[in-house]
Image (cartoon, rainbow, N blue to C red; front, side):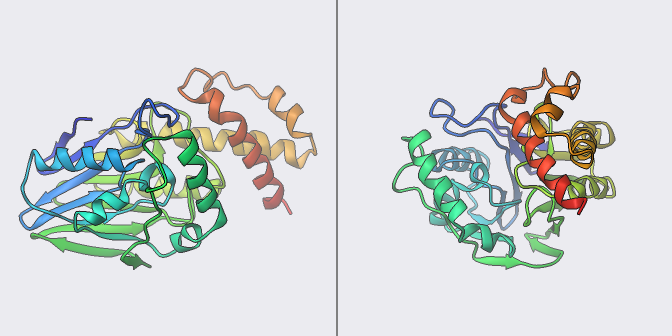
Length: 287
């Protein structure tokens, strides 16, 4: 892990375009941090306690100031399993209040149980789900050391609790999993219609750099969010037509031309499930 500086005092670490595994310690998502004169703001906590320790080490190479806040873009496992380390280091955790439902759900608990099996020793019986100290409802501007940190809810889209974090003085936007670069997005139970609309909202920020949840940063937002947006639109169009025509999913999937996307990392792992979930969503939308 090596942090790179995107603007004065603003850094990111970039996860791998892989599935989480013991070999990569679940390092499959990005995180960032902003160094201010009064402390550090971290965006997302990475996918295991060990990764959070490595992130702290990267921060400590650059400042002796403490981590004051951790702001979560959303509560998916690859972004939160490092939280306990940052919490123990004295940080206050901020997240959107709609994450409470997921945090206290059977889905979150079962995911942790499964991760303890598939990601050991990096996720084990000592790894726990950590609640936010401060739940955010609407847009807020937080200030630390004279630097404004804008927090904007943009969900439900990728998740119900999506936040984007903008540092206006540095013109850097942390977009979380609204943006995937150089890999197939993970759609899951997303509201893909609103996700597409949320992507359009990102272009309204005066950002020179956008940090996605996965993949390298972009300095050409209009071009580089195109992959995520076009992919979502394509699966909505193809699966929506199949659902409306009452074509069974298996047949619809076989008949769909996936050539534009099939050479992207994680296509084989994610695309079929993305298409199936979207097929179900489009059935509901058409009712």
